[in-house]
Length: 485
Ligand code: ADP
Image (tube, rainbow, N blue to C red; front, side, top):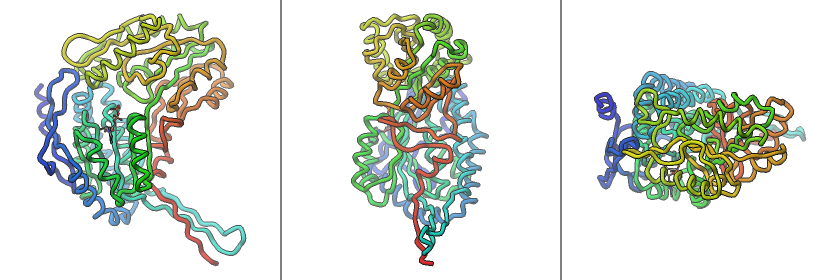
């Protein structure tokens, strides 16, 4: 436990406002737990609305200066932050494993992926473009410029404690916006360490604040009611996203919403089954299934369903479950007891409606919130597990006969974030990709996310895109300047 203690002692536990740590105005703290043991890892400052307004004051004081800072300078700070996160990759990885539970190898993957948003947007900062044309009438010119939106609030979830922050902070800072981050209550430590890294990278005081709190609405409410805030960017549940969209109407805030998913993973009869099984392992089991892109419904052609299911079951039954920091662990605990109970409820409901348990099927005894990696076959299409986001290591398999049936099943959800298809036919892959109602489609690939590509959903999965060249647009306003001659 020694290196754990050393690491935890080096992580800030105060609110990060104005480039330094401070206590919460009311002096409160709350505990952060290790989901693999249930033990307390640290106590962090518990922000209230008064602290939130203090962070906004500090952001507003420097917003103008940051917007006027040369893009190259903003880029260099982001690039240095990327370098510092990379240099401290092991600290970030272990910290995420401790507070969130994922296997260390996955945490290392998240450090590489999450930090890349900082490097990618450091490269975008100097490439913000406007345009200049002659008006079609010939009587004047059209000048289009881009300006930062202004102070932003980012609210992030616990499942990717680093990456869900960097994909918002990177483009905001590159565009010239200041940002206040409210990380999830379960995993605030990673974001506090990142704030310190940004200070070490030379980010001016006040540009980035981090407010840890056990009262999310008590912090976001006063900020969103304040006319100085100009944008809210959120990743989390559709339920909370809808509340924030409603609240954002009061000040007509710009919004970016990355909400829930219910990804279909469709295996056609002409797929390379081994590749499909590899893809399903990644799309389903990455992050213990706690990802909004996780394959929630495995929709498999009936003619190959048993073969696919048998191969997948063999792989999933062999997965090593345990504390994320132990060698060989592939599946860590779920984030909380409540989350584990919710996965158990969905599985029990599916089994009661006729699903067959091919492996797993229940929680693991002992300390921590572990659930067995599970495969369910013959899942009834009207069971809750097909309609709701599982957010756990459970593969639920249903069958289909025709391509149209597969497309209808894939689209039969109010969500539309990720979709996966496995087929060896180019025609079919493009035809089906076009027909799928989702913001992302993986063709013969089980991991889609890439900082250089636009990530986001349609339908109730959200609004806006993160990453790619599109990501920075979310933090820019377009201004049209008319010239008479
Ligand atoms: P999850 O189900 O993944 O925990 P949530 O949507 O509950 O997703 O949480 C995502 C983020 O939204 C977290 O940072 C959480 O603290 C925050 N949050 C939850 N409820 C509210 C709310 N009413 N207002 C603002 N933020 C909220």
